[in-house]
Image (cartoon, rainbow, N blue to C red):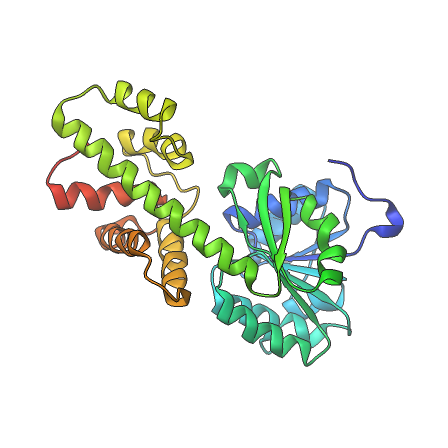
Length: 299
């Protein structure tokens, strides 16, 4: 990953240093961009700044005032709205022409609302949610789907390419969100299918190693099978993507969908059940817990 020429390096502000954001911001630093960070928990920003030689902003307003492009990577629409438009939000410190790039997953309706309010102050918004979970955030191989104006995408592209391998301009503002939500709902539905298949196989007494090998080599193969089956079988739910975050995304997809999405609805029910069993902060592979509870069988 090569750094851009110094004359083309915009000043980057990065808000949100959680599981994904901290890894993404580290890649932006490594790509040679000057980076300032802000995080709701100051200690996390301080630790990141010390580890990566990044500046620290005291408020989102200060982040906006000192940046050409501000990236947000937070949990939901309420947090994005607070960071960008709150009393000390990015927009209050922004010069006209600031570009905000929201990599969070908040849904198209919230994106349109926030984008409209930013535009009133001559601040631009690109919605650029990401997929790939923590390992791909770590090695800068995320898939990034961006919605917004052509010029805004062109301006943000070098930054986005410092964090992702596949960077696509998918349409107008909000279309990145829509595609991300559909993708995550398919991932959740696939994960539920994997959990059910493993429990069915266990109940039938078959060799699960053999079952997984056949599925991975055959038409039952999926990314979720490859990523989640080992953790499910070990009941190891170390979070790469939290279950409650996946539940939020599936619900946003169902709210926005104009036609039935039955498999996503089934995934929503399993996610709710697993969260109610205490797995909200675990990886969404813990959907298995809902299947185990429903069937009375433990994998």
